[in-house]
Image 1 (cartoon, rainbow, N blue to C red):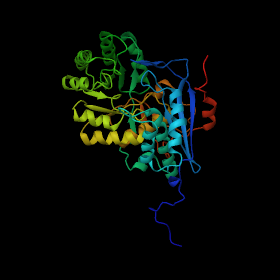
Image 2: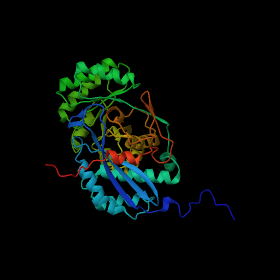
Image 3: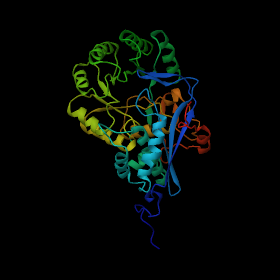
Image 4: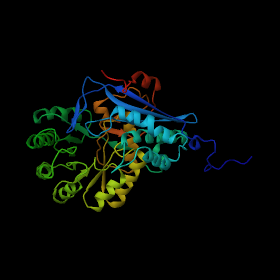
Length: 395
């Protein structure tokens, strides 16, 4: 009997199986501390933080993904994510070969159309990420090996400063420093311009040699953003993230032309074609890679490759993800060699009790997982214990 070539894939491999089942679990995770952006609260201490976990199964192999419903940041809610997946996305992809991520992406767009940009990216991301996890598990390799693209083994995490007054900033910076963080991201747009600037200046005072960047989450007008950019430049800020509304392309072009601080885009870049538009109009300095915002790893890889090919600098961010989302982001950022500190702040604000073997974070540095797929072992019994019915009719 002739030995099989190592390049031959058996036809019975789970990689060649078709998607059997897609399940959603809205889970209530413990919240460590409160967190807010310019649009409102993201996490509230003492109240559970809802995440939607997705399990995709094919031929006895499964993978997990995550969606983070944050109505203060975008339009998708826990209820809409669950119903979008259960009633539209899952039926559209059942029976599709698990390896055919392109067909899955096209089926998603037929089920929930793109409109001006991508439609329902958080829901799509959870299923797409679960498929990547499944493929890695089926092949017995982590995602970087599956992609043939892994440029770093560790990713440095920034500490988030959000909601504090100038006088309270020192305690937050000290807490982050004590945990080993050497870089800080400051949420602005939560106060008036003078207070925003004072908060950022206080962070710089307490972290004089650290990389510091700011995120306005669409809070400013063009004129206000230009005033703030000049103040941020005096403070020594490395990037000004999403100062204007996501669809204010003309305003972002004007801001990028006149801002002394590099303008980074997050909410504006839902789909790779959005980045292509901003590149053609010379309206972007930095592209933020964010798995959930871009509908998952398939489209995020396209966006990151486009940024590289166009000479646009990449930075990394998350969506206050639990450990599944954290792992997915680490694999993506590692694949593209993002070497600046990133905003993957989930561990700062929430716990992930469903995860047993998971991402190691030490002194503000996360190690890219080496286990198959995402590299996070999910205890399904715990997931079911944490599950809540977000569709239950309220009085």
